[in-house]
Length: 241
Image 1: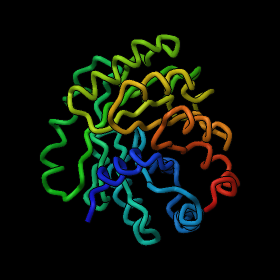
Image 2: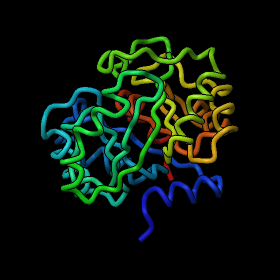
Image 3: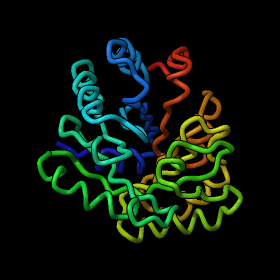
Image 4: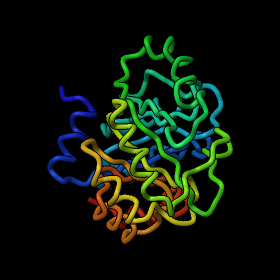
């Protein structure tokens, strides 16, 4: 069977649009999961990401187990900390916060997670994670105590993304953060995509079908939507199959 990453890579080469729905264990009511997943199954979503900046022990595992009962869509961990790792998922974005300089989030947490990861069969995908300012202080910024990159410094963002690829990252993830006032700009996405030869993920602040389409048109291979669907489930009507 092809790996999650190989499928993302193949889709990127063919110009296919991938969409991940991000579910935060800290914000979801477990009893409402079947209905929410039913909506995902009827949508064009290709992946489910599970994770948040602050999540209680075992909440991620309970949520993933419930999600897996109702869908065959790949479930990928998007962990904010080591306690969010569970072997019940299909894969894990091994996030390195390359926009910051805190060694904990560049390599420290990764070392801490190794013992746990070795006990799972998760597909681990090294991912360069770049936080970009969006008008609001994001949960990622608060938890990691790192400053986001300035959205006007497109050159530095682009060089950071390329450095991540040269370090061996398999994906680059441009993040505006949960509840962002505005999504990543088209200029940033285009500039980064122009320099990469690996798939590009973009998330944060996307609240309309038009913003979603512009993000794809600018070069994103996989777009992540979370808050928009949490706040307004009618958005699913706009992304139906």
